[in-house]
Length: 271
Image 1 (tube, rainbow, N blue to C red):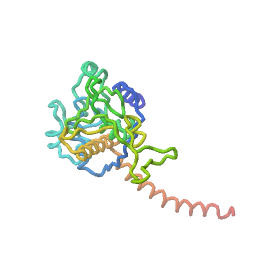
Image 2 (tube, rainbow, N blue to C red):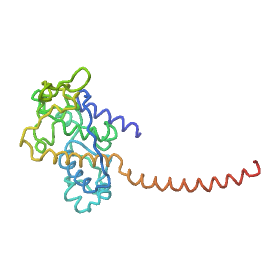
Image 3 (spheres, helix red, strand yellow):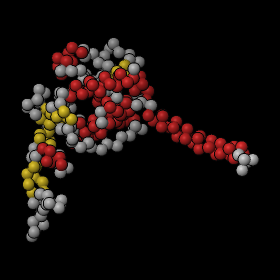
Image 4 (spheres, one colour):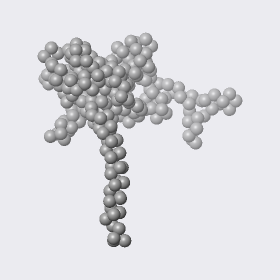
């Protein structure tokens, strides 16, 4: 049964993308599941900006409240907007399948296990930061990581508008080094666009100044918190399992000593 669920989630996420994957490199993100404040902020962002389309139906409000140290009253007042939901309800939304298909072409994927199934947390962290303006797309945006993606950018008012531009980068010599002027030592530049910039390790995106409510650092921090929350939701018992695993290894280490001594006694007469 679990394998069937995982297969469904993978298929849903693929269909919802409605495009082809890109070789765009993933950004590193070092998450901290012990940072309860970060997880709380991530939960708030998910409920306010993501849950209208994306469900987390394998997670419960109560489990989130208990794990993240959110009081029951605060949880119900600030993170549960549907009056029909109770604390023990799953984190699902009221969007019907027919409406989802009409608006987006397919049902938006459930995000409970997204960071475990779709390239890890690095994929989501990068994905949410590389939307750019594209007037040819139905929602007016595209994504470097998933070209021709079939979803709008829900946080564009926070991040601001990014445009895909060409940039001047140093020329590369045949030996792989940067070409420079003989007298001044300044690098010789050439104009590159798109994938050519990506190959050079340069983002082809440029943020339109003052088009978003947050600074670049502030938006990156918001996406970090959201990624942290989704990473927690994919395996809520991760920290507890790791803690118990430490005790198990410690027990096995002590048990090995006594087992070795007992084995030595058993084999004394043999030698």
